Length: 122
Image (cartoon, rainbow, N blue to C red; front, side, top):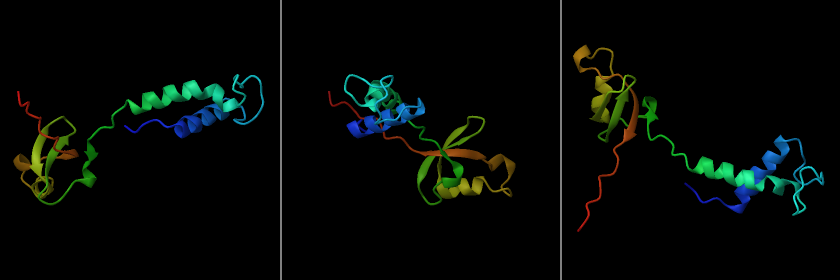
């Protein structure tokens, strides 16, 4: 994930401050920290929230509508959990309605092949 910047923290703290009904640049003592600016009272919570969001990895699986159609090889998955390594143009044929049932693969998602494991030179 990307590095958390002071600008990101301030933006998030300002939103948290506003969501609590305070003006980020106001002088409401209930929201104000010893630093004298209201949004700073939410700085710690903003850092924590951004850190939690950055720790989540998005799923590499993509909806089948965006699947490559050429010679690229990738993983395809069905809703019932079957996964296969397949080439784009072959999967398109396997998903056609007029393909015999025993050759069909009703994929719902796809993802690029992961990188091969690195071999230790020990």
